[in-house]
Image (cartoon, rainbow, N blue to C red; front, side, top):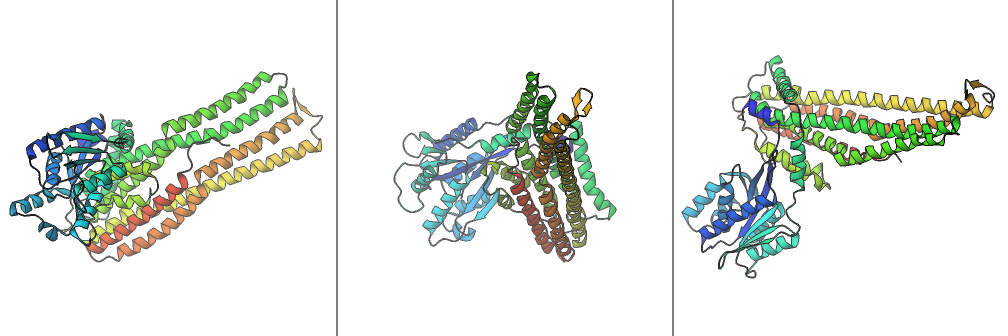
Length: 539
């Protein structure tokens, strides 16, 4: 993708819908069955159609056994930008012995070479158990299953009927193509294909960003990365091609995370302050204008404002979008350096430790996986270990360490400022209550207002304001986040020392993976702390 296309697309991410396949090895009319498989794929597109911002692409999950597995895989791979995931029931050389002819083995290897991901399943005690395990794997990993089945009962462990019944028991949507007779297809969709991850990704892709601002941010991000190399005369690593791959994705996630964080902060502050203002309004009406009860409508208006903020926050999901998009941005930030370190393979699994127990965030795993699969293949043969190591330390680990040190100081300062404010408000409340109790202001007046009434209003209003300030401090988790950032900075210092001690590219990759795990752990802690703090009434 060119820089211009990359910028115009604004880092939007397509959605991968995973089509599993199970079926018989011996098929009598492959042409007719292939035609039915094409119709099944068309039907799946009707069930989960692409949107103007989010194309739906297919990934077929197939063990590539003879017959149905390969037939459906071939049809899916005819689709634009489709890819293939292959779970192997046994080691490749052992699996090849199950295929009868050299032509079959050649076809298998040709399809396997097109796979985006190959997963070797754990050893099994028998071939039947291995086939059952791989069939269950396909069912567990797919969004919809296409089964080429004759409808007859199972004839043994791992047979097609066993896998079909397993899918139905699991509630996995199923399109059954009968391999007998007229090859009619039957939909067993249950609750339907789970389109939740697609809708969440489409929501992310639909968000509008000014094109000029987006392009400027992409250029700035790339320049920052390349400037580190220029300043340190780091020449060898292929920085340009990697930055062209990931910068647009990072910038989109980062800009949207900041947008929704700002909205969340504004609404959260307004929520607490409006509630405090409502208390002050009713106290003022009772003290200064008891003969005008209609002024209580000010309090009503303020409380309606509180409820509107809660409704707006819930409808627009400012909080959820902020933490999800921030998580995605940080993963894209790390992806640049992981690709540079030569790490490959399947990295989405490491994300599950962060969102464990939150299946609604499945779309994040898929979004990152789709971007990671597009990474350029980096050849580090001509790169010196010193160049790669130095760049990773200065542009990634030390940069993250500086960020965490700065954030630690900033959050601690904010915690102290808000704590001081609540202390001052408590002291002022105590003074107002003491003055009122002493009776010193009983006969004094400030024009039409009584100082005694003013003290009463202050004694009532300032605790409410103090509670609002304290609520803001608690919602932001300034103290907890400050301590977490401080701890993370110390851990990153250790990663820095280990990276500086790396003597070969393989060790550099190992330390880079360790650094990623540190950052994922920090993200998990932040997620756990901040997840409950959605926009909610302050009572």
